[in-house]
Length: 92
Image (cartoon, rainbow, N blue to C red; front, side, top):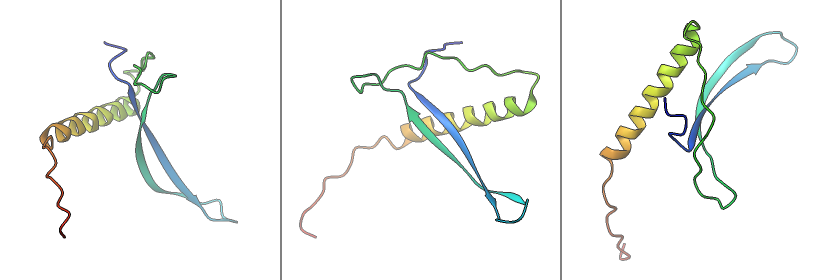
């Protein structure tokens, strides 16, 4: 496995709502953010840390597969929409 394959990392954030005075919590939503690794010159820098996933932990494996599918989908979408922008007109 190539540990230096990208300079971006996807972060999953889950938000929970808790009503004051009640011990009840419920999940509000989940968001995914892409974080880019930059060096001191603000240039893309490969991430040099690998990701360890225990194959015996089915929940971790499920999350990894979902992340890989999101990554593949985004890469495919980026190539599909690789169309040059139309020129802008100023006479609107």
